[in-house]
Amino acid sequence: MARTRVSERLPEFPWDRLTTYAARARAHPDGIVDLSVGTPVDPTPSVVQEALRGAADSPGYPTTIGLASTRQACIDWLERRHGVTGLGLDQVLPVIGSKELIASMPGHLGIGAGDLIGYPELSYPTYEVGAVLCGADALATDALTAFGPQVPALLWLNSPSNPSGRVLPVEHLRKVVDWCRERGTLLVSDECYLECAWETEDGWPVSVLHPDVCGGSTEGILAVHSLSKRSNLAGYRCAFVAGDAGVVGELLAVRKNLGLQMPGPQQVAMKAALDDDAHALEQHARYAARRAKLREALLGAGFRIDHSEASLYLWATRDEDCWETVAWLADRGILAAPGIFYGAAGSRHVRVAFTATDERVDAALARLA
Image 1 (tube, rainbow, N blue to C red):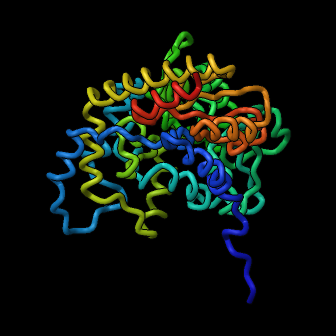
Image 2: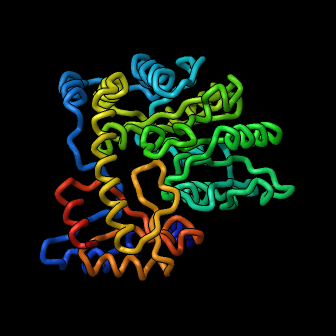
């Protein structure tokens, strides 16, 4: 029987469309300054590397549920750094990077044809991928009223936002929690940039699991966290999901049948990273300095910066089609991500990452000047 390939149902992989612009940027005499993908470039913290080396002798299979010590480290970090209280070990599950979880979660929870998944108007493309993979309908919107009489099975939040860096206030988060609970919608908050905040006049970004938001109950709520950005662990694929014990338990029941297990040494390294705040504060300071320099240079070159109060990106515009801006930057050896990658609402912006080395950031400053 002829079958439709899964890849044909998926949206076009966005980064494939950037290839020609990357080639233009690489042609610069001093080489490319790649500010398109927010991949960490600074060393993995020594405390994490030491923990990984110490756990290298790992002959047995890991378990999907993960080490109790690693899950406890997740709980302790959420409470210590973000005021989340009352979580138990049955409410945390380590996962092999947050992208894998986001793409697979709807299908693992039985969401499928005839169901609806909502996600932000500007958003990480993997929310749509997860909907397509399980056969659900999808709606990209920032307005709850846009759902009309429809009740989504799952609603994604993302604060701080990728790509715009926008932070949702506590009042808004609380409103969404109440709306979802009234309708029986599972609310999943992607909080991978929670510690990457820069302009905090309105307060630090708040987890959906904070008692001021959820009322001290995790019913119908999950939060997704990653150590890729905070701890330069993108290569380790360390992340976790926390919240409603029943939903976490269902994910565990499915995932253990699929053999989705974070390797044991990585679990030990993940605990070491979560237990140590010093390296995260040092990395935050590095990013803050790079951000400040790039922001000033972009403003000086005629850009406007919208939102961008958090995350690892500057959401920049010259009030033109984003591909024109990408080309303008590529001619100067700088590669940025076109805003259209994140939805139609981003068609006049580019996402500029400040995760490059200090030397490459300084090169970008000279070219923008």
